Image (cartoon, rainbow, N blue to C red; front, top):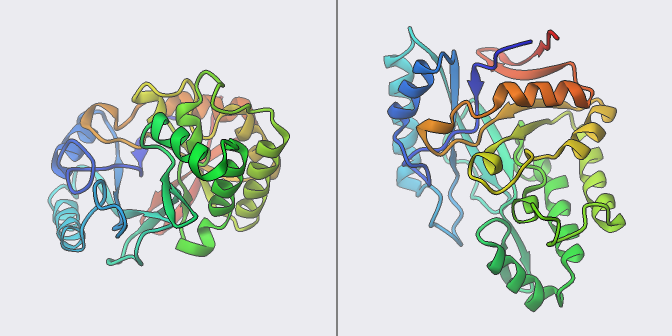
Length: 274
């Protein structure tokens, strides 16, 4: 068994997080973590409500680099971005990128995937005639091409529409169109040697009972020989290490034998010991 001491999916007050970067670092040190990566939301021009402005992106970089030096004897700190499909090109150099899809663009409108369930349902009714599977197909087309679009190292919250599907009423996980859509994306990204995060953010905020991606998808990833990491998609000091060790156990049960962590020389594999 390994004790996961790294989280690379971390947000601060520079975007939609609740705590400063320094507060997150101090919490990580207190929890015994040996490294932390920051992944502020890159600028999306059509929706600036949750992401960093161009000016804040530069301040974010400077703050993280200053803190990296300040706490170098206590914890490793890495600078990243969460790069959405619709984000502008990265404005700073980073140690890594998380590639995510938070919107689908259809008929001249941006449909937010994870804002609220009511907004999503209304948009699907209006733009897709109520066909949720057409929406999901469009979503996974974007996800499947997220590396080509962003050059990301890590695929963020792969099955994000599950955020509003805890009861299975938004869509049927066993629907053949849904399965075909996500399997195509899985296969493409696996062939491109991307790392998939097992993300506990939906769990920590009470939306989901499983991580992104869920166990069924994780088993298919294991069959494909895909790479994984674990992250908490943390927006506050309480969730920096949320269930990361439990996700390693889940990954092992799904067929994985190790996870990938970021070091000073890039990503490397650490084997499970069970």
